[in-house]
Image 1 (cartoon, rainbow, N blue to C red):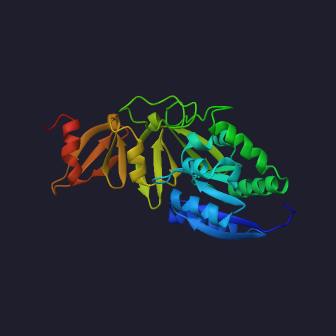
Image 2: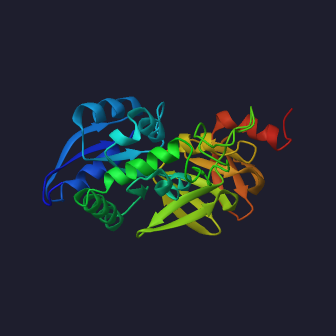
Image 3: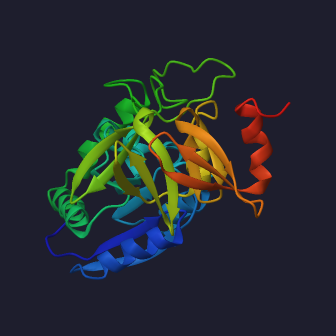
Length: 283
């Protein structure tokens, strides 16, 4: 590709705010045309085949077909240059095993985006994308390194060649969550998390006296955390069960919990009975 040629960009993410953020950042780049958006894997597959973008910003975790499924369906040789966008470190820290050009861990800052986009542009200009496609093909066919998930605690991405099958009936839960601040990725062990609160489109992980912000829905976190260890006490709060010290009830009939750290959080009335059973207060 000649230097300075306009790059055609496809943005794929199931979150509208995430798509908007990428669009805003790309609007400030020279020689860029955003040719389309997709909010799920199936739409992404169709858009890649129809629009033939030069670069795709590809969300990894989407309902239905994931970003990995998109790559497998399109085929490595036919994939455009790919920048993974993810909230989970098991993908971000192993993105290069999949021969992605780069990765962005949500929430990412402007500087980190600039780095990823500059790398994508540079590799396209150097015509290195075909080499990355060959590496990706080798990985998906079982050659090269295994696609380890790390954060999920499994030995490989489910269904990937070379993956160790997860035991039947044993769900995979998060063990680590990546948090990006000022272009640096910090890995927060799930075992260190005391509680999680919602903050608009973000979630705040409270661990070891610090709050770490990630762009993730509470519903997704609830589904990916071990229910034997974490419980969603309110639409805006998830707690680690072994941190609960006391169940509180005020004269007005509202409920709450006091954690070992002294933090108090509200409990939704429709969740009190289940919490009481766990605490041995109800039969």
